[in-house]
Length: 192
Image 1 (cartoon, rainbow, N blue to C red):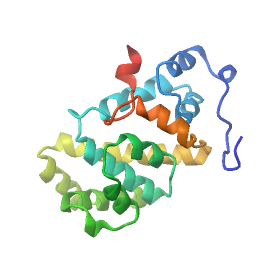
Image 2 (image 1 turned 180 degrees about the vertical axis):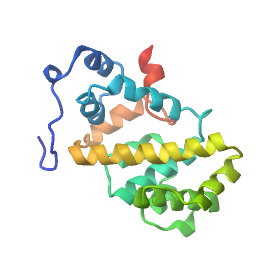
Image 3 (image 1 turned 90 degrees about the horizontal axis):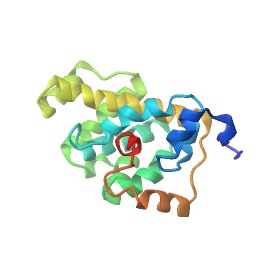
Image 4 (image 1 turned 90 degrees about the vertical axis):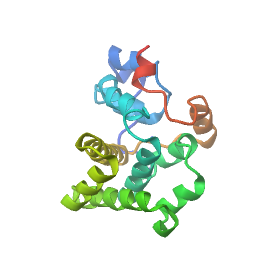
């Protein structure tokens, strides 16, 4: 167990058969092993499989939300992984994380502001919700944006509370290099 880890990453003997089988189909990230402790890893992957498809929500917007949520929550586990596979320029990620929002485009600035509201106040204001509806053109798409904001808040709080250890630089590069620039191989790929 690492110094900051509060719950040890489980050994195979700590997990049930369904979760062990699932872990064989996803990249060997420590976060997946910790989620497997809940007994819900296969189920957890299903919404992620959808969220990480470009047809469901714009990948750039999703990653802006993720990085801003990590910043608001003081979370660092997801940042190294998403820096590798998000496809976002390092300058944009740095601007989001360093609160240099005057360097990002106006919509990304708005997404950062709304992500901050959800992270810090537990909900978006009615004006922010309307900005999402106006930008995306539908209530469904606005709900998707809010779901992603809520999801990443839940995930960062789980990861940080359990103390999931970061993969090393070499492990991280090896794990993410095989997944391509659009994201982690998740539920849909894992289920095949």
